Image (cartoon, rainbow, N blue to C red; front, side, top):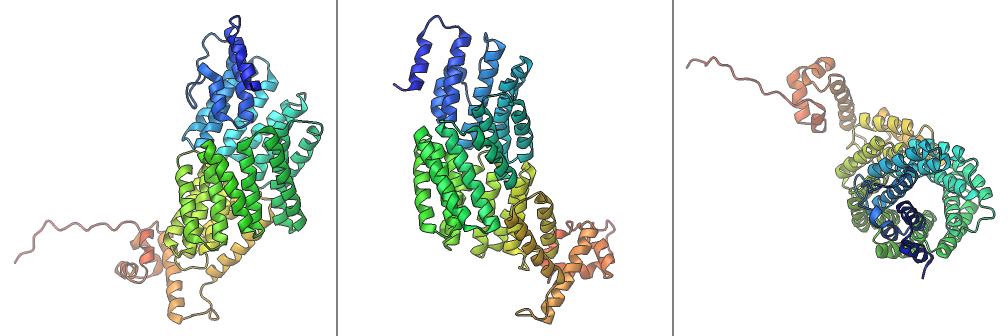
Length: 494
């Protein structure tokens, strides 16, 4: 009999009040959620659980118990929603967690309210709203100043997760140092596993920035330690995530066969657990490895499955990243128009959800893959660079800064136009591009009106129309739809 079974056996005691029964269920569920055993947590909640994001029946329970029930049901809804990629799950989870935290606040139970806000922050993190998540975690950590070390460490590690996702690695490193002190004497294998995993993630990214190979070696050691602790804690789902993280590092080190081996282990675990959300994330890593191996057809099939799963849920940052990978695959296969369209969508999806760093990186990838091609107008390339520069203005990642500078050079070359020393230069081609540049600008300033654009260019309306219908068909979409001229009501005489 497991400890969980023993705790639930307490429910057989007929003298327990409704509040006592609910609290037993909540404590067991909280432990199972912490272990990543979401289905077991749902069963442990019993009649308190209705469905994902649905408000539980708390009739007859006191306010403190009600708050705890709302918190656990909301937390579990968020995790299951992420695991199964269920649309709207994060919003519903936020409502439940917020309601529970507000009740704790009203009862003066500040520590419980603060920890509830850290759970709420995870919902925002899954959606890619890193600023909102950071604000909640900052407040929660400050309010837990007098709480036990492990609880404070949990909040700090969640904070590290957000900072890593946002590319603020030095902030993440500072929080890791503080959490290490808090966990110095802890025997909580789950927390130690989380610490080692996040430390490895930070080291891997710093290694890419600073070019120190020893960072990668240390990251591999930390990942290995994380796997060990999660195995001790029997956290299979989290162990699978570490296998994926290690695979990503090995991909960065050009060790593709080793990366596939770890991805195979990760896939086997989450497939058995029925965790479609994690499987989609692992498939994105797999696609990156396949792209590096120039196995573009296979990469396209893998990332297509990941996108199909992620489109069902509400994790926009993950979806944007997967769409970006699909854009790279299609560009390498020569399907440039489809690649451009999916990358445009990736930028918009991430930006609209608040995942600004993801949006910025998607814009950079678009420029890297298409900036030198004539299929995309110079004005759009310039616009995407400006957006990327704005979206990544807070980045501390030197690799991202280097990509920005490289993309700036691409944009400058496009703005300068065709150069005489370029391969396959022709005077006709140079004049064609020069002409297209001014027509595009005139249409933009004229709001798409061909008549007004023609006046700006000093040519007749019919001349510009003919140019758009023949040698500048690509710019047709920049104009407003042509209005059909009305026929005269006066009939001409025979």
